[in-house]
Image 1 (cartoon, rainbow, N blue to C red):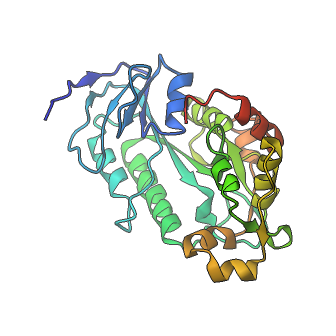
Image 2 (image 1 turned 30 degrees about the vertical axis):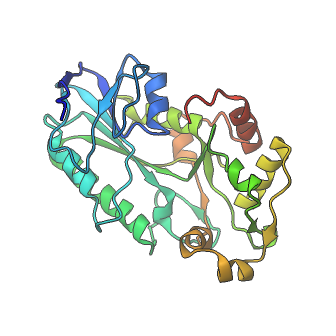
Length: 294
């Protein structure tokens, strides 16, 4: 096995743990003040090194006295709690000044299409969302113990370049008919990156933030709009009753839950106004953007 040299990061650096679809874009936006840890190599174009929370026993970097963390890794589905996050928190010595965690609006569960704020009590029943809630609680308790400002971004569906579901449309995969479809909540990846950077700033208050574009048109509408802008045939539609007979339970579980995410705190406290408040513009921008970051 080749031993990778330990890296030293400087004061006021943001350590991005999990440099995937979102993390890589934060690295690209802040190449001089961020450093990434990724399971796979990102190449010479990114300030990053490899690190696997499932297998590596120590960090490949030496931490400074003053730094922040952006954490984008989902919990493992092999445990009820987030063993990955637990392992990382144990390794963060000294502790960062600020820790931003990307969670999910799925923690709220089903609210029958009602508006949901950060004060709404989570009522999820799915194992994936329960793991996220457990991770949020773990992180907040750790932050209180170590004096770390904790920012939690509850994120809906992320779309952007390479994340429009075009292959599903080409394959003719069906969607729920509009009359049976629930409201949609989503955010363009560029706007999510802006939220991450805002939450990492020294002046950003700690706490939970719902993020999203504020447009609640259904997932069915979104898929049809992607098809229209791509010049593809609209996807076929099925009734909810027919979908329950043939679609896998995992897909159905996402579609059963219905809510409208309120993002006033994102706008008023973080100061983030989505560039792509209209997803029609976000789809259009995604189709013309350089796809070198898949």
